[in-house]
Length: 118
Image (cartoon, rainbow, N blue to C red; front, side, top):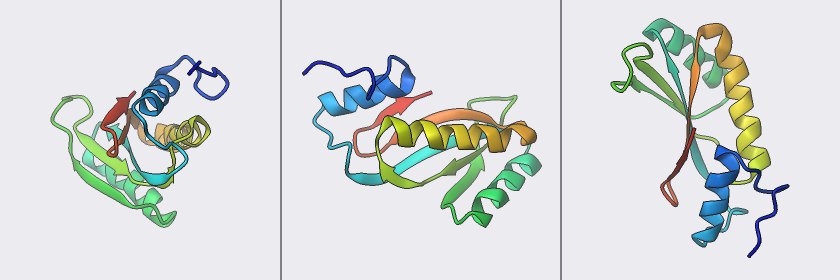
């Protein structure tokens, strides 16, 4: 199968989705995708979590031991088809809404195929 760069652009998201497709994943099937944002302190992370909860988003909150500068993590769990458009749009939404709270997007994970991207 030849890669269609309009559906799978040459960037982290496009590469991860292309690999998922190559591994036999039905990307059109809705599934829970984990999107993580890390924060410099607990208060800012909780404010962001509150914002997500106000928008009916499922989330988790925990310490993030991999970074001394950003030791708190909020992970959102939207259900969606794994398309470039969906992934990129939700990532952009999280980046823009977490920016005033000093949040840093830390990637997404799709449990069905254990694929990460940043």
